[in-house]
Image (cartoon, rainbow, N blue to C red):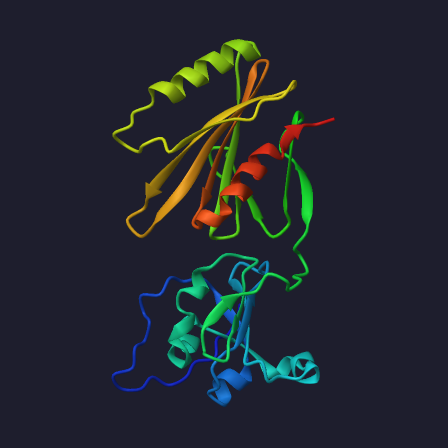
Length: 255
């Protein structure tokens, strides 16, 4: 069990009680003990369920300082947000996120920082299917048998349906369902066809709303004789559109 370090609350202080429970933050004690605002932060794959994956620093730490475990504490989100509320939105970004503060105190996304678990790997879905996906994604199996991958801001669900029909019949059925889907619930924004000689791939793009945010979803169907692999790919940022399509294409038949 992680023991959290907490600062004593002050009067009229925003306590961030409504901030989502994302887990503990590993933070340089320069931030808390010296009240220095963070200038560099990254989110790696968590080491335990109560770990958020966030590692937060002032930018003034030496390598020797960081190598000493006594100089790193594990804190609640609210403790660090009281020191620097500007990271509130950043803390909700997904695994693999890296941010640095400019001289003007603006946060920007870093794209050239190497995380230990940031590499592509191939997972076996069933006897017939595999997926190539970044190792940063956490994998679990839901109660209904759905395979679930997530980094927090990008997620996908996969399930395989068996059938007595051949590929052509299944393609016709699913293509008709896409054409005739109820547009009053969510409008089809785009349609996809990524078929090859082995797999027929058809799908569509919509937007959904969970009352907190609007996000994009690609529903895709990878079809072979007597089997359909259904995938739902969720992503918050429009810039992840190509990632979503490529992830779907990276679902292949096991060779």
